[in-house]
Image (cartoon, rainbow, N blue to C red; front, side, top):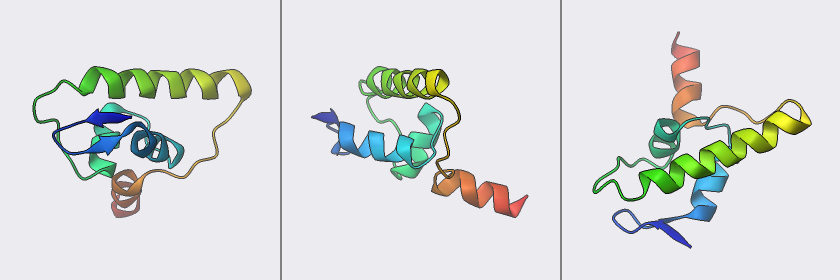
Length: 77
C-alpha cells in the first residue's frame, strides 16, 4: 500500500527502513532520501514507527543495524 503519494513510497519501504534500524519518523524519511512534502503521510509513518517500537519492546532487544544516515552520523562522531 502506498504511504506517500508525493514520493511514491510504500508501507513495505517504511518497514524495510524500520527493520534496517530507523527508530524515528525523521530517520525513516532520511533513509528514504525524502522529506515530508504535503504531510499527509506523517501520521501513517508515525503509527508504523510506534507499532515497530511496541513490537520490539515486548520481545527483547532489536539487533538491527542503524539506518544509513544514523550510521554515518555515528561513525563521524
